[in-house]
Image (cartoon, rainbow, N blue to C red):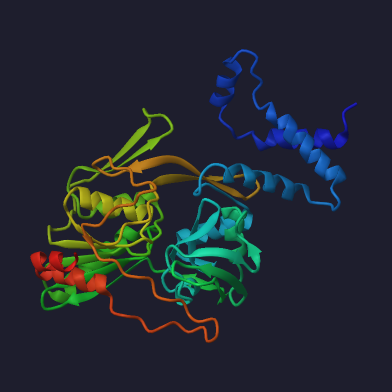
Length: 407
């Protein structure tokens, strides 16, 4: 007679794979002697053994969630299983308001790395910078921590504290920083005149959220109203923009492109290719453009930068981008958890894959990251001049001189 715990474990194992594609199962069944999902018998046995014999009782849900965490962690740094609380928080991020540190992170090898701090967030105020390595969270090493677990640990109610141990190139030793979680309210677009007399405009795009394209359009129209005339030059700042919605990246690119490919998305099957193209309707005038990029420019931001660079519509100035050229699909699960799964890679109009490589700027202007606040006083050092923005403004005023200054 089968042990009742083993029967329960087997049932959980069946549910665990219920969402897998039928085509995969059919393909396995065609192989001589193949038994689809045979390894799940081992999973069921291990689950039953842990439930029955482990020195401390562990909730069945935690065991299954842990197994899923391990499975997804084997895929790639951007696929992640999100428990219900993290999945709800992700929805809040899409509309630009959430509780936490405001920190986009990724896993490189076995290291948790900062992709970008969100603008006006506790992470940005603490001085965190793209490329910083997070060695521990509240004293717990991140070395074997899944991305989902790291995100869960950094979330929390406003006013609560979290201690991050940070390492940066050039540091003699890691630095521990105490951050206070807050309600992060992110307006994805802001603008200001860069030179009112010359009708030069600066637009910062902090993330690609729902309706970001409309916010940019409004910013440009507001600038025209302030100038009482047409824009003569534009700087779009995508530095430290961790990305967001793919469709918004397409729509934003379409603002400045009248025709041609914006991005091609290629899935597992080479025949499954989706191509997004520009439309001529409502295209912005052909004023000169500079796009500011750095190591924190990632994902959807790289789609925009790559599309405008390939079409010769804008000059890229700054440092090579992060290099996240994959597309994640969000799958909501029946218990309120979610799965962010890499389903495709995207390519620029010239079919460049930037995954793992990034996009090199036309004009390289490297800026060293500032030191973080000291552990003693927690104060940020005084901000230095924005050399990249200065070079961008110079290029708009005098392209030949601006390009030379950026070398």
